[in-house]
Image 1 (tube, rainbow, N blue to C red):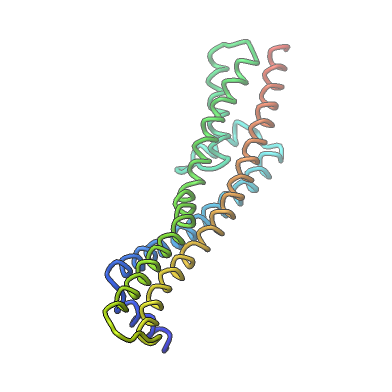
Image 2 (image 1 turned 180 degrees about the horizontal axis):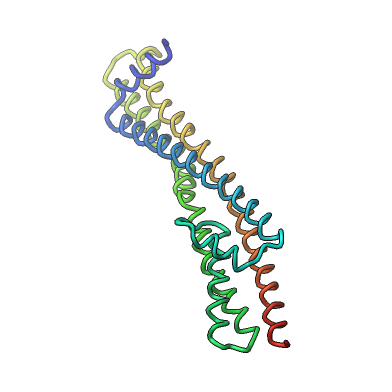
Length: 227
């Protein structure tokens, strides 16, 4: 309890600029934690959706029925978006009476590549902000610290006898800014690294599915052309 009272007392006694620095870092920290919980939920759902879809896809389900089932959903995301985009383009090219299997497969692959780019962009939402907070928060806190210490030493110039008791409160106020900068930066950096790794793994899994799905469609198209 005394630590909390001491913190708020030091905050109230700090200069306006140092207070603004502390408030900025506090806002950064709150916003960043909200994004961390949001990204964690979204990425966990994406991983679960990937496992569920792959189990259904590789179980030998009819692709047309699977496409109809997924297309009926109101919100198509993740690997399902890649599958729907690819199969839709595949069906459209086949109806165009194109007899070249390679053209059909290339068109399907391009459609899935566009869908992949959109999904990765969606998964990476807020990650640049976390990286920015992790990079600049320590420097913002350090700026507040330097400013606070500078003011403390300037104030000492107006007294004849300087003591530690006179300069200690000002230095303590300033050091809180550095502590808050680290408090905002450390979780942001850890979350950014962890989420970036998860996004990279999901992107690799999506890319592998694209290649495997393209191979399946290529074999199917080639077999129909030779029939």
